[in-house]
Length: 148
Image 1 (cartoon, helix red, strand yellow):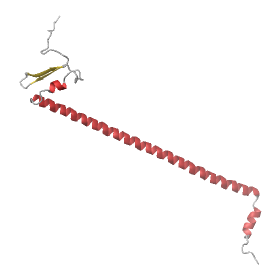
Image 2 (cartoon, one colour):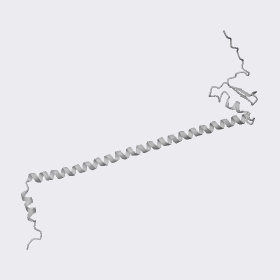
Image 3 (cartoon, helix red, strand yellow):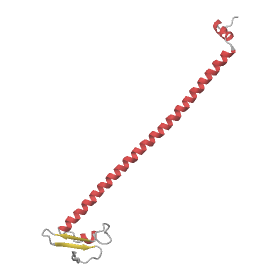
Image 4 (tube, one colour):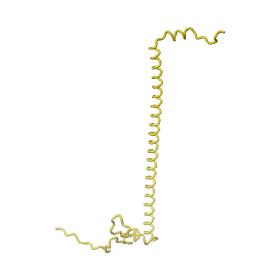
């Protein structure tokens, strides 16, 4: 009985006709090619991880910067609101609705601006109210300027 599998004549020639040197070069070449592919896959994976971490860090920094800008904007707006509310108190004081305004806002414990005396005038330019923060007397003693 004949075998169903017969090597073709070309493959038999290839096996017999190719020297060991060529077979070795082909084997080493294919192995080198596979190792280069594995190395490139490793480098690609490493670079992807690095760029992803850099992109995440950049996004985090942008978000932190935006949060800081929003917080500063809120702080500025709160300062405007506080400033306007202080002026509302001053207008209420001048209208006679808040008589304790000077003693509350310009007492020695609340004075952080270095103001020593506050004097408020009415529309007819008369002294409406006065407050001394450092125990100064009212009216202050004015020393005449001596010209030499």
